[in-house]
Length: 151
Image 1 (tube, rainbow, N blue to C red):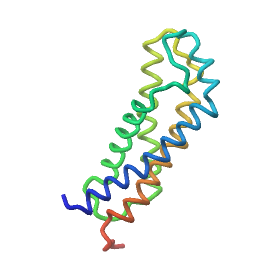
Image 2: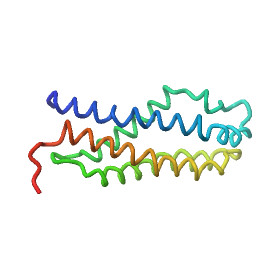
Image 3: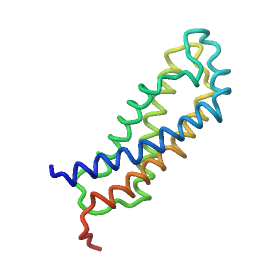
Image 4: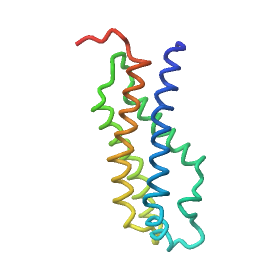
């Protein structure tokens, strides 16, 4: 793997990671934080308020799914990524990740607040997924795609 390829991988993943972390922080803490905190009160002291979530662990989750999305979008690809395909790929990846988190937790914990499932999944599927996919496509096309794209 050459330096240009490593640079494209790093910049693409970092370029999608940063806006997704910022947007998720704004949504889960500022915009919907009180709603989530009220919804999770049934867990009592066993759950942290949204504002006290561990950003390191959240960052690891973000890096995992964004890296997986990058891998799937660029697997065996030399040409440019279509931003629409990348956005839809991000939506599907977030449907899988947020759906897994919400639905498994809902099936495991009797006090898991079902009222957070739809808004959380909608946020991740309709906002975070497309943002990540478009960022990955834009950066990959600039740094990683072959400059000799055929029609």
